[in-house]
Length: 325
Image 1 (tube, rainbow, N blue to C red):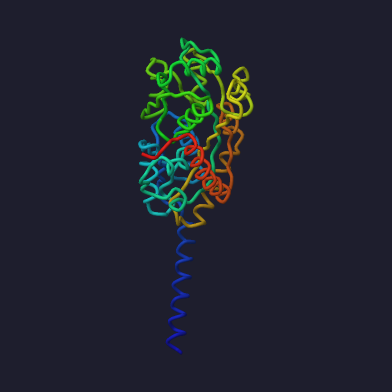
Image 2 (image 1 turned 135 degrees about the vertical axis):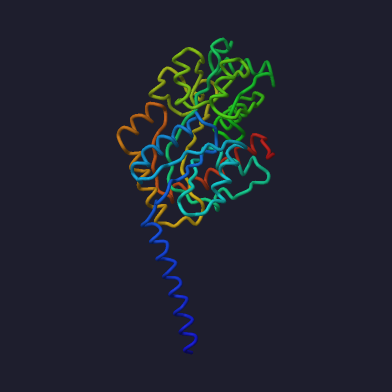
């Protein structure tokens, strides 16, 4: 019996040491630079949001936040790095809409989209703008649909990869409008925009944050937005739903994750600091002006959204006839 009590006491002691270790680690966190992996190329909305957050977080935490662009495979390559990183709060991930979609597009995922990550917070939601070259014959969504129906498989739409918000927007549009288009993937958002301006592709579903400068410069033309209501920053651009595709709506999100099993106190510290950033007046004003709605929800709320979107996009893509590679 004494041996049993001694063993039980040892287990309790080890457990307390483990809890205490997590507590001390959280108290000392961060003691070195933090790596924020962006699983797409530089220049897109995910990269821009990562840099907005990292610039502010640097001051709040007193450590360098190194943004590491690791694009490829619709975000899988960069996400896999974080999924397999030590759960110590020093490797984070800024995901884009492909995150909950990839399980439906990639046959052999190297990680589990839900179980292998610890959500911290959703950074913001973004809409899409359907843009074309100024010389494109169609000047409205209805005209685009008619033009595409007469030329099945002859129009190209560009994206940053299968699973990206632009890809989902275009596939849902094609399915609901009854048109057939060809997907062309590029390394990053700047390359897609260059391809559109250069005439390599005819259609691009892109975020307002990078579309607006080109629209204002007259290099591209906006035909519609993917939200149910018109955007305040683009009041003259109709919704796609009101322009020939009733019920059409696509809204994406960006958020920050850590590896699964990251200590809860570290998750809480990061969450609190990031939410403060997202609610600061200058960040709210800047992001809103560029078509991004800052969020800053709880880890639990963000986790629920990830799970919901994994199931939702599985249904949408199956109905659209999109199969895994």
